[in-house]
Length: 214
Image 1 (cartoon, rainbow, N blue to C red):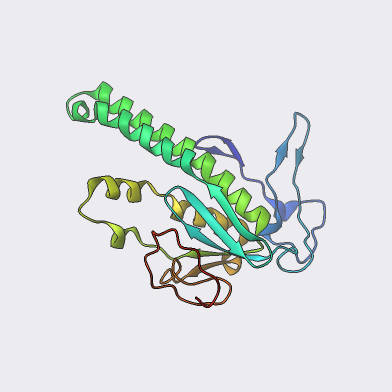
Image 2 (image 1 turned 120 degrees about the vertical axis):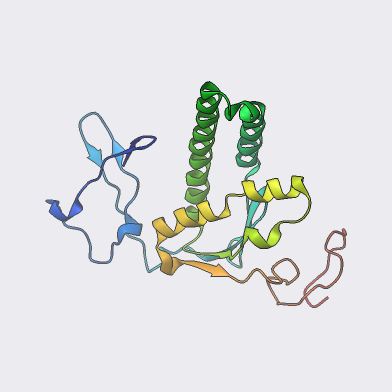
């Protein structure tokens, strides 16, 4: 359990006095609820491997996470607030970065800004992962690599470097288990229709709306 940023308390459940169902794994244990007298440990016992929740494939974009499943339709999670954290922190760091090589005080301020950014972004990562976990039993996400996305544009490269896809995917793997988080080939994910598999080779920036099969 996280007591405060950087400090943790570990609970050894192997010496517990209460039994757990055989099908409950670490992914079925919820976040502990701490009261002045007790620590409550929620245990989720779903019906079936996915708890009745559908498999949802997620498209990781710069300002949103878009999920789709035939059972749920489209689900969009707005990540613009997460992006604004990185942008504002970048502007603050840039104002003191030039002085950091010559001033100890500037280096301390720079470290404080970086730590604050990690903590604030981390809270958003956990919240986004919680929302995804609440709607999806199995999560499919694009196997994206930032290395192949960089161009000659500094503005674009900064946007890519600020993206938090991997951090969110890592949290999901820790909560759901690797068996229920699958990496998908991103090729064609923006041009294939999710219902029928038809490929649209036209300009995707246009306003044309097509039906299945063209």
